[in-house]
Length: 140
Image (cartoon, rainbow, N blue to C red; front, side, top):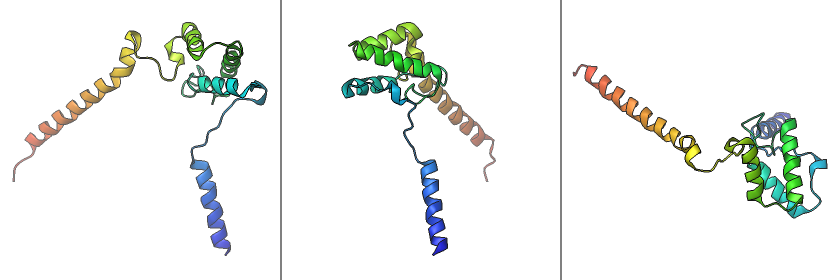
């Protein structure tokens, strides 16, 4: 009975620790009173990169700069700016790097297609190495 209970507790703890949880760093005083405006601000901040963390959105980051950007976005939303206007303001100020999914254009072309180039080079090198190593093996 006790072993079963402790095993169940262990499984629950491991599940909680390794499950993907949505942890947000938006503080309660940042929330907008209007639910539609808050939803719009949250959607925008989920697509904006934290310039300190760089691997998180500002919605997930606890960095002071991320908080400042969240507040700025909420201010723009309250003023009635559209999503595109807010994204344009942010990219004009910080560049396309601030977006987690930068647009495909001439300046970001390499960012989008370089991974495919590296993949093709890797496949070529592997096949070349495989052919080369096959020739060296003695035939029995």
